[in-house]
Amino acid sequence: MAQKWTAADLPGLDGRTFVVTGANSGIGLAASRALARAGARVVLAVRDTERGDAAAAGIEGDTEVRRLDLADLASVREFAEAWEGPIDVLVNNAGVMAVPEGRTKDGFEMQIGTNHLGPFALTNLLLPHVGDRVVTIASGAHRTPRSLDLDDLNWQRRSYQRWQAYGQSKLSNLLFTLELQRRLVESGSELRAVAAHPGYAATNLQSRTGNWLQNAVMWVGNKVIAQSEEMGALPTLYAATQDIPGAAYVGPDGFQEGRGHPKLVGRSSLASDEESARRLWELSEELTGVSFPFAPAAT
Figure 1 (tube, rainbow, N blue to C red):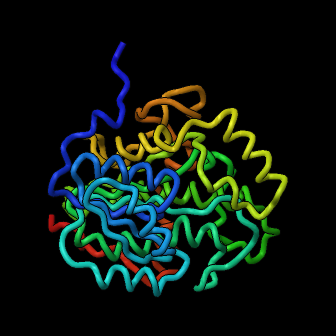
Figure 2 (cartoon, rainbow, N blue to C red):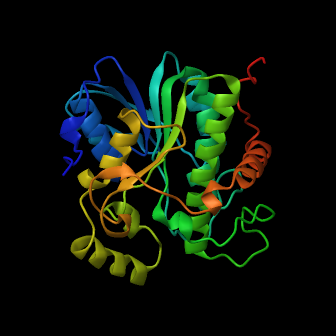
């Protein structure tokens, strides 16, 4: 039987820079700890820098905290404009889950804005600095939507359903990764776009739905079913450091990908639809005002 991959299998990462969004808690913090232990310089890109500083204080290694609010495109642009120097790996980890209906600073539905449109803009603005790959954290919930409503991405005409909105945002993460990889190949870039999901990991995401009953149910699930943040971070670490193909998707190897050690996993047919990926990308460019920075390679 093949040996299970763990954080102890991380290669030496001395001299490499990782930007991890939402790194002050949960999967992002666990991944940041492991990356720093392996020698990486880890930039914690967080909305609340005080919480980020507290998180960084508990990490052994080279860390830096910078402010980034993915629900505010002005903050995204400010972060990108202030960046100097190379980034080896960008980890789009930050997100919200099943929150009450709300709007970002730019008027986007909160989940699609924070989980997809913010990372979409950030990635394209930072891409000229990235030297290795972009890792975007998706979820098994990407299988929830039966379709992707590109005519009402921001839930302006439909009755808001928090779990469907969350699933739509996670589906968008995978379609974004698919189209980003296609565009990278088309431009002649050797960068890779990959995705990962943590399975069911006990994090503070489950306590922020704004519904006490759902919070209580998920609190019980965290205690009884979920794996630790450290185990949940393994797919992120694997996707960020191992030699895997572009557009690959990494998740746990256990029952229904709920827990376990990282491996390459499948995705829904909708998440593999190249035409939907292209249309979502074009709509995302229109909504954010941010475009892919590289031109197609000459033929």
